[in-house]
Image (cartoon, rainbow over all chains, first blue to last red):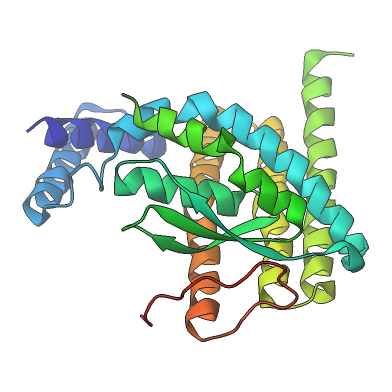
Length: 158
Length: 113
């Protein structure tokens, strides 16, 4: 019930932002289509903690700035390697993830891929391990530091 | 100089830097070694390129409906970009392509599929 309410509110907000029509009839129709989509989603069983990870979504803005800064820094690092491909010393490392839920693990893997210079190649949800390919050993070593893991875990709360 | 002109200048500057990042990413796709390394070049296009170009367009956007759409595009790119990159990386790994010049010992591979 709570999931349906949240999903309806989010979809209706999205509809309001995108439609640009604000008369009574269309507002009502928009609300009912948001509600209908949410009900169908609930019936399909996709409105669970994995399909609608509210805990992560509401805390996402907190780490966004930090992530943007990291991305900018490693962008410059990768450009340096591209200009001189001899600097590339690729390395594969296994990163331990401390996230409890699948949504958190996926977020961690996505953050690693989002940061240039590192790509998550394989995610093992049984051992909570992410296999990471780094363009140089510096990039790979940065992944092994607990920094990003801690940031993503703080998204999960608790 | 008015505030409007300053935001326009920031917008134009980040559009230029973003385009430069895309060019560097394309260069990386051509110059780097194996598939895994080339994916890092594509990563620059995904993040620095797309991000800075979107930010520049945000600064130049004429009204809020455009702003909302640009933010949504950014959000969707951030969600789908890494997923697509990971899909490629995993496909390469599952098809038994080992990365070149990797200095660390290989870890055990999971089953195909």
